[in-house]
Length: 123
Image 1 (cartoon, rainbow, N blue to C red):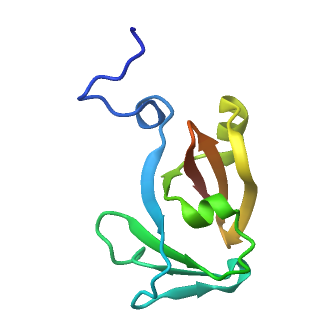
Image 2 (image 1 turned 60 degrees about the vertical axis):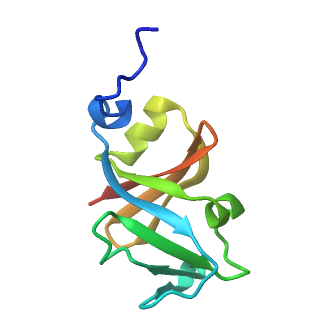
Image 3 (image 1 turned 180 degrees about the vertical axis):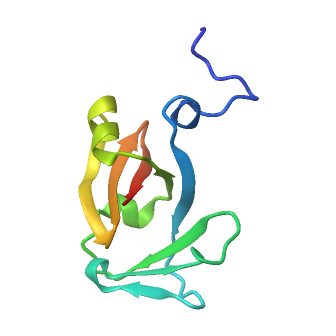
């Protein structure tokens, strides 16, 4: 197969589409030091600002409005220049449509090959 990625090659999303790795979100049920609470999502996060590898732990309250898959499965997050363009161009299965969790930030959660991916756009 000519479209197979070689061991020394970057993934298509970074090599051809220009996406940049942002973080990996890992759900946890354990209280973490220095958690930040995001009331809108009933979510506690930790590690994002301090972990040198981009690992963010995420602990959800029982009544969090976030999709259950996102609450229970890890996700990779990529920075994109134009969120709407990426969603239209690749026809992904969208789990969470574009939304603004904070000022100047838009995100969407997609599923690809049974893996959760977060796309992030900063303005």
